[in-house]
Image (cartoon, rainbow, N blue to C red; front, side, top):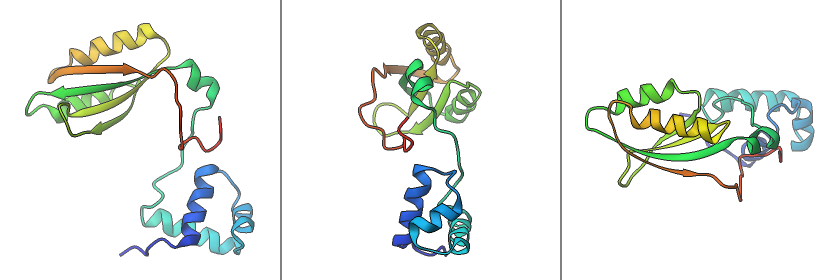
Length: 151
């Protein structure tokens, strides 16, 4: 059974979310711990599945140039797995979440142009198993706690 997170783990996770590339020596200094202790804690957090990986957050330059949209999708019975497989093949699909309510999935899309989004939505609507879609284009982001770098 994984160990429960303590206050130091939470502070370490917060620092990693702010900058996953921060040197362990700097993390150790900020936490008031030995570097080897920080390395061991990070290894434990990774092993326990608390830290699933490290990635790149897009900066404002690319983020603001993109056309982003949320697309609700309802699917026909017995087709969800096939629809998900088709969505996985589309590079513009960044996230698919199963949701409650009248739709089955909420899909986050990122395209370079409105025309590309229009074509993508036509394509999604024609996928075998897709019954209905409803899309909202993101006009602006008012709060983003995931963007720890500030841009």
